[in-house]
Length: 283
Image (cartoon, rainbow, N blue to C red; front, side):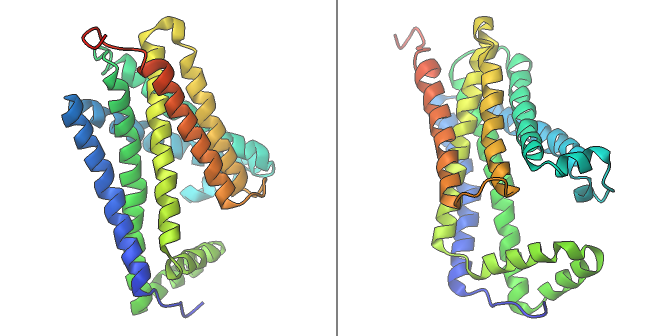
């Protein structure tokens, strides 16, 4: 590949708008929630730190070391070859890691640094911190990178990246081409899908935080913690099955499944746990 399709001004508009939305809206949600509920902002920050520590610092490197060592510049080993030869099992591992690590992170947070904050708003504050920080870090920063790539494509500077990939990891050239095509054809529909996906993801994280919060607050409800693990694992397992071409469904169907998980987890936890936990001053 030596030449790339020009990234038009309309695509730039949607990329810039997406960057603004993914960076500003999550921050605004956190601030508005903190002000309206008079919640300690540290609870939200702890939620963000939980995602950073348990999802990015612990989960991803261990998962990659186990199943995707080449992503870390390492050689395949017996376990990774075994898993990659069995896509369903690989998808299960890809789902189980975030399920176990992220929900255990919530459990540890509520059991330690947040153990004295027993008001119901703590659950949502932590979930907002976790979910909104994920949006800002994964989507906001990614869209900033997309804008930089789009500028490089239009100026011809992107060819340097292609040459480097071709020399060091030629098997990844197809991925580079996919990114270029995506940017060249980026539309409001693509942005809409990305926004909807993140909305449902945040709903899921808030709902899961409610589940784990009450699992910590009441030992008789500790079963809510493994329930959160199962729900999280199930969501990412289905996404991994799609990603590894084990199941062949449309992207819209996949988004519908993610929406169902997010909406049902949030409203189930909110209506059955959070809403019933009415403070005495409101009773």
